[in-house]
Structure formats: C-alpha cells, structure tokens
Image (cartoon, rainbow, N blue to C red; front, side, top):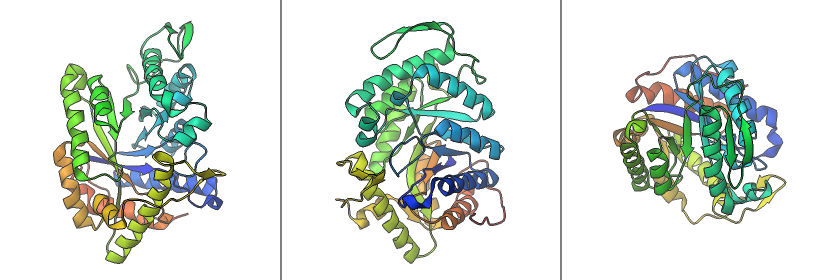
Amino acid sequence: MEFSIQLSAYYPDTKYGGFRLYQDMLQQAVLCDRLGYDAVTITEHHIINILLMPAPLQFAVKIAGMTERLKIMTAVVVLPLHDMRILAGEVVCADIFTDGRLMLGVGRGAFAFEMSRLGVPLDISREKFDESLNVLVALLTQEEVSWDGKYYQFDALTIQPRPMTQPMPPIMIAALSLEAIYHSAKRGFHIQTTPLSGDHKHMLDQVAAFQRGKAEAGSKGNDLTLSLSRVAYVVHEDVDRRAKTALAHDYYSRFDNVYTGPGIVERGAIAPLPRKQSMQELAENLLICTPSEMVDKLAPYAEAGIDRFILNINFGADQQETLDGIQCFAEEVMPHFSNRGSRSVPAVKAV
C-alpha cells in the first residue's frame, strides 16, 4: 500500500491569505517528495473556503516543477464545470509539463451550493459528467472526433498536441456509492473513494464493490488501482488526540453544511453547523492516533486490498504541526506498508 497526502487547502480563516495558503501546500508537497510518499492529491473547488483549489492542473504543474518523482493526483477535476474540448488540451499540457506524473482524477461535483452557483446544479451534474467523460476519453485517445449528444455537439476536430502518456494519462473516477464504484471499475477506470466519517464496514463495502467491478472488467481491470482518502493524523499524547479530533469535528461541521446540509455560505466562508455525530463517534471513525496505533489501524486497509491510502491531514492544524505529522508518519508508519519505505530527512520548518 502506497501513501499520498491530500493538499486540501482548508481555509477557515479567510484572512490567512491565498499566497500563504498555497505556499503551505507547496511546502508539504516538497516534503512528501523528499520523504518517499508516492503522491500528493489536489482538489478542485471554487467559491468556498474548504478544499479550495480553483486551478488544479496549474497547481499540478507548479508542484511538478518543485519536486522530482512525486505523482500528482487531481481529486478531482470537476468535469461538468469545463468544456471538454478545452480541458483535453489542458490535460495534455499538464501531462507534458509534469513529465508524465499527472494522474487525472475526475468527478461530477459534490456541493450543491458550489455547483448551482456555477451553473451546473447537482440534478444534472451526473448526466453531464457521464457525457463529458465519454467526450474527454474520445478526444484524448482518438483523432478527428465529432459529437452529437445532449451537452456537446461539434464537428470533427483533433486535440493537438497528442498526449505524451499513451493512450492517455491515467484517469481515476471519484465515486462514493457502491454502485458507482462498481460500474466505474467495470469500465476500466481507476477509483478514488472515501468513507468520509463513516465506519469500517462502509470502507470494506466500498473495497468489495471495486474488486467486483475490477474482476468483471476483464483485461481492462488488470492494472486498476483503488485509492482511498480519510482523515488521518499521528499524535503522541491524548491531549493532542483530543485537540485534533476537535479540529476535525469543526472541519466536518463546515463540510456537512455544503455536502449534505443547507449550504449556508457568506462571502465564500462556510458557516459551521451543529452535527448529529458526537465527538466520540467521530473519534472512533477517524484515524487520529499514535504511530503504533496507526500501524494497527491501517493494517485492515492494506489487507482489504487498497492500493493507495490518501491522508487528509489539512483540517485545521497549523503548518508546523502538519509538516511534523507528515514527517512522523513517513518515518514511523510508512515503512510497515510501503515497498519504497521512507527517507530520513532533517526536520522542516514552516515558512
């Protein structure tokens, strides 16, 4: 099992400033590259202060220029917000500019507030995503593509230049429901998923859906991978465990607002709302624990067949704590699971 850090750009205090926000993410990516992580993961979200990254492909190119071997995964590019004829060319450029290290995660969008404000409400986003994905794959793998569908109608055209990675950069579908995971894997796509704050059984059900789809994909399923994201953070004392759990609870009070709640947002800032899940219940489901406990808790993920575990560690801790957590995880947890082990580097100070 390999590991990735999610550069999720959580932004509860909008006075912090975009420059500092993304410098923090870049510093985390550089440290991950030095420590032997397999990848970093970047989101696409607009007009809200959680998971904020309006330009994921630009950010992928920036990260590639500051690292040597790290894979760069989008999680995700929201296809219904883009014109595939333009996005296909941008993907080709990002593939070239990252020296083939781009892994293109794509999805339909998740937050009703965001999608409706940007003109693609969730009630049509799945249908538009399905057609957009088909158009994108055709444009990347074929020349002289024409289309006559519901959302795209165009005469024959060819995206230039052609992808450096053949037949196209690896595409990963972001899927949460068991049915979506199964059908996407069956079509031959890599999968990104997360149980969010759900329990262990839900994670196992997601893995089973992937394995079933992969098995039915035939030869297209041979090299498919499953990446799973979860809030995970190494601590050394109970007082720190409680503090990080409280931060995660506050994070989810905002996340739930725009994911399943009413979408109360003012000037880009998401309002924290009361949660039905207690702090204790959340603590039981998240991986906020000591390094030795983390090894024990991650073992079932590896045994279940997850190929890449994505740590969501950006949920409110300050930058120095986050860097220390990235380093501690690499040195004390990763060697138990990853073939690449970890690299010992001096402690890094936040800038």
